Image 1 (cartoon, one colour):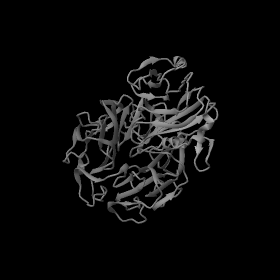
Image 2: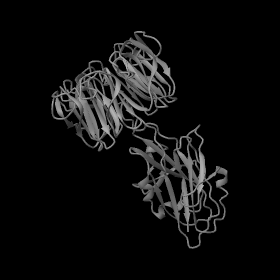
Image 3: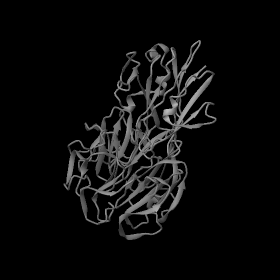
Length: 533
């Protein structure tokens, strides 16, 4: 978009900002600019930047705003010229996006709200009004993501269909015309991410294809031309994230390589020159995790957790302590995980689920096998313990079990667990042992859903007996789950309580016990099952 300040969230969920601050958009009081990162507040999980205002969602799902408020874009009930420190807007919010003088908010029930000015119909409520809305007003339901352009809006519904409304100048809406639309117009289906620039728009479809439309005078669509497009055109495949400045575009491909196109007057493409590009060109930099943009600046987070920035820096928006532009990526020595408006590598990590196995007559543990069916860009890892105090992972380089770092991304992957040889897991034989399961996602706009994760411990012996089986678990509170047991491979299920699971005594004949946990919203966690023959 057309902002000149940058906001980031560190791994401890603290919010930091730097750059232009004339209207208090950094949330630290009013000052001309900040050249280095300054801490703003704690317990933040998402942040969005408008032209001169900022909004953030805290860990408790409350929404806060600060900065320019001349048109009520903060939604706090006033039109004060500027607000220099965070003020609470509303509760139960899951996503927010900021435009030039308005804000769009999606609550936890997928209801879309808007505040600020609606002079081009950017709210999508069927009217265009010059008087501001100083409180968030309800617009529509079944919305999961929004993205604000300068004076227009992109609305992604829960069925992955994309709608547009507001100012259609330069074809920014993708409707085939340059007309304004006061009601949302359907653009296309199968969309999973949308990003808006000043007057150009790009989306990523569910098959990771990149499409773009709108203003293209600087080649910002990356389609090899400099002609505006009023309908979506396919640009390339294998794209996982996109971020748009006013007149430039940055993408992250599925191999985590960084590419850029469009205006390069301040080196915002990171190509070590100031030459515009109308095709996407790869940036020479290490593999990247997430991306974000300002008006004519870019900031990225690498796989090694290094933060790089490049482009315009007249207000300190690069965060490197100077006001000199940079035409190639420079490290700014600031560890960050979440960049405003873009993909978050560790967004919404679930509390770990701990499954306890008691197989007290088993003498030979052969191997582990895990069946999983989880959404794209969602990950699962595991840790092991015999006392729930000391958690371990197997170090395949040292060829030994080591103490875990108790972070979900440092635990063992599914492939690593399944590759463990019999000799490696002998320390678990005949013991009560525990497996801690983590899930997290790269998808900013949806909490990871638990889809039928089955972990099988296969045990072989000449004359096996299983005397008892015990299961315990820790789930997301206050969402208390129901527990079900199946003895016919999931064909029929019987409701149980955790205490009853320990009473599955003396299984004399060939059998298999499957256990699943069902959350209140119908999502299922299939726990560890034990097979014996």
